Image 1 (cartoon, rainbow, N blue to C red):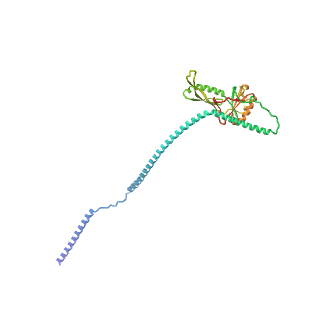
Image 2 (cartoon, one colour):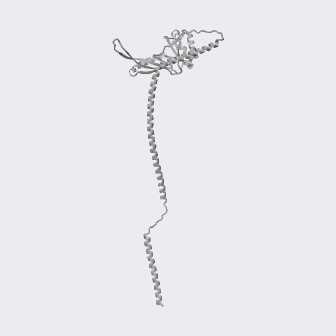
Length: 335
């Protein structure tokens, strides 16, 4: 019995030992496998990394925007350059046209000066003719009104029935806008001669010179002198050449609003009467320069002067046309 019991106990111990050995072997196998197996670590998400990704994305977006803006700026710079070139071309064209306009204007002024003498006389004749037609119409209306009435008619006898050029002393006035203004023409012409003599040497270098004298008595006088060439053949047959200065024209420029109203001018204390007092009626011609709005006043003044023995010369002027003279002009025709 004891031998059986001992044999069973040994078998149990062998079995336990085998099991322990198998467990040890399994633990070793698992340990070896665990040593060589890859390890996957799951770490918590770092907020700093995410923020960096957001910033990186924003930087990439801004970088793309900057590239786009740089491209737009380059395109605009190219357009600005093209526009600048076009502007320079337009400015050059404008300067060329301005120069051409200046040359044409100068040529026009020279032609106008050459034609001004004839134009003045033509305009004066036109105005005189218009005045005559107006006077004739007025007389016809008065005659028609008086046909059925009988009254005393006063005949006015002027010193000379015909207007003839005069070489007597002249005193000049201008009638405009209801006023009559004295023109110190003789003093201005004296100043013109003195000023021209001081500038004659310049005609050796240029064909024409201009000048201004005054103001005297509310007027300035602008003038121009030209160089004229002459050629002649003396008795020995040799050709002689030379040059001389000639006045082309003068123009009166008013510098102030002087003068007296026509009604006031007929009074004893007026400037008009004071100027006349220094001239003898039998040796003086009163020249009245008259604009269209002063024809009625001209007739009143003419009657007034004739009653006192003065000869009167009328000089009609177109509206806005200055008083001027030239060697090609005409003398005052007194009546």
